[in-house]
Image 1 (tube, rainbow, N blue to C red):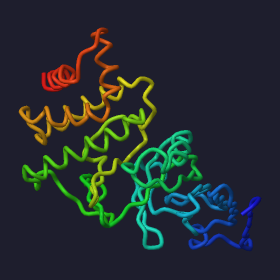
Image 2 (image 1 turned 90 degrees about the vertical axis):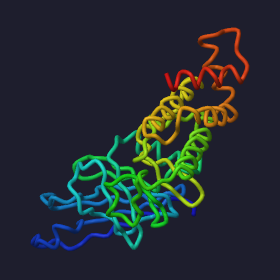
Image 3 (image 1 turned 180 degrees about the vertical axis):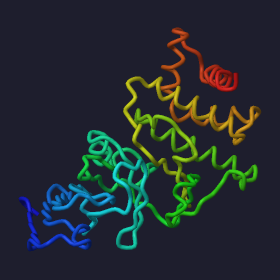
Length: 277
């Protein structure tokens, strides 16, 4: 569609009742560049609920009439349901919200499904991700969503091995594009039928050096080791798997200590040693 499509709807002025406190007095929508941008005006802002002042969404995931959330404005993480779909709203800064939406679909399918962001009347920004009832989560705060809650206490050794493998596979895909998550934890994972997705992407950023991706991998494997998901005698397999997919980054990391360079086996042994020591 060429040009902008703008539509403003204004409700008649009247005495503000409790019902109309929860309704915006006007709505303006603009469609452009495969995005839908919606602005709301509010006459009364005294409600304790989150009132949305501006929202920007992917055209394919537009949330019509999404102007209020039953949560306190400023809450860090909010679960919301709209038109039989479920979403997670995470408080962040304006630049991060815009960057995450712009990066949608351009980095990896191992990231959660970002569909938009919003600004509230109090000036808080929230990034919006769409979730599925087919997902599993380790985050107990998300039990109220349609996702299923799971604990590693219910995992046998085979499932633990597979979980570690999926995490390293997904992390390797991100690192191959010089993208850092800013930390991995079980609470930031969504389990799907085909693997894992990383969620809560507010700390995600571009690695200035390829060697920085290796440091994040080391910290991730240390974390999984501390949880008992991977044992010391099993460490070589995820190290070798990561090295195979991010060989350039691993060699750059190793050359910071040894300029002459080691071969892949020596680098793998160094990685394993530094992770478990």
